[in-house]
Structures are given as C-alpha cells and as structure tokens.
Image (cartoon, rainbow, N blue to C red):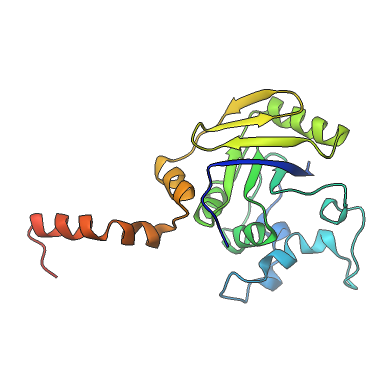
Amino acid sequence: MKEKFTRLTSTCVPLPLENVDTDQIIPARFLKSTTKEGFGDNLFRDWRYDEQGNKIESFVLNDPAYSGKILVAGKNFGSGSSREHAAWAIAGYGFRVVVSSFFADIHKNNELNNGVLPVVVSDGFLSALFASVAQNPRTEVEIDLPAQTITNLATGKSESFEINGYKKYCLMNNLDDIDYLLQNKTRIEEYDRNNGYNP
C-alpha cells in the first residue's frame, strides 16, 4: 500500500547502466495483465533470471549486499516505449525513489503517477553517489520532498531537484489524479454553478 511521501532515508540499489529502456525494466511478454499486481516480481526479469528461471547471482537485485527503497540508475532511464507497466514494476518491487541524471519524459511522468519519485541530479552528484555505494553498500540517501533536496549522507553533499507542484502535492498526500478530483469535487461543482454549467 502506498503512503504519503514527505521524507525518506534509505539505502540504495545501484544500477550504473545508461539507456535502460522500458523493455529491460519489464519485458513485453509480461504486459498482458491489466492490473498492477505482480509486476514487481518481474522487474528487470531478463537480468535477474536465466532462461531456466534461475537467479543470476551477479545482478544487483540478487545481491544481498544491496537493498533499500531507492534505485540509483544511469543516465537516460526509462527510454523506449511508453508502457506504464514499467512504473508499475518499479513501484511493485518496493522502490519509492529512482535517482538518475536524466529520465525519458513519459516514463518520468508514469513514475509520478504511480507513487514513485524520480529525482534528477547532476552527472557529478550521480557519479559520487555510485562511488559511495560501491565503497559501502550501507550508504544512505535522504530525500526531502517538501524542501526538494537529496543528500548523500556518506559525503554530506546535497542537491536540489525539480518537481511539478501538482505532482508534489499528490505524492505528499498519497493522491492519484482521480483522488485529487474527488478531493476537489465541491469546488468543481461550485465553479460549474458560477459559470452557468448545469449537467
């Protein structure tokens, strides 16, 4: 179950690969389901398991040294097709934040629509974070959504990040687009009445 997002301090799972596309995040053969349940089990499926279904021990999600609610990914994360299922898989696995120096726009919006915060950082900050996690897998990162800052607690370095004000409000209040409309139902009805709209 999703929760309101304000501040998060967590260890990280590093994925220092660039141009990770949505087919790598969730392969096309898993797109038949129309509900969000179970997609986390197949996040990065072809990198996590071989053709016989055995774990590929060298892949980071199978390495017990790494855990946490923050995925740190290389530049240009979520490129390729616009499938929302990729965001479902990331959220379903348990990630609340993805950090990268660049996101594909559609995937970035899909993450926001599914309770995952995409944090865009500079190339230098990203490189330093990868280095910190490589040196110590227990490195923690602090995300402060109200202040719009990310801090590498190993180095003490912080950066500000941008986020659409509406999406920020939705994350902080655990609302999707429908929830937001329902929350403002009275105001919408009042606006309609004041502007002569009678359904």
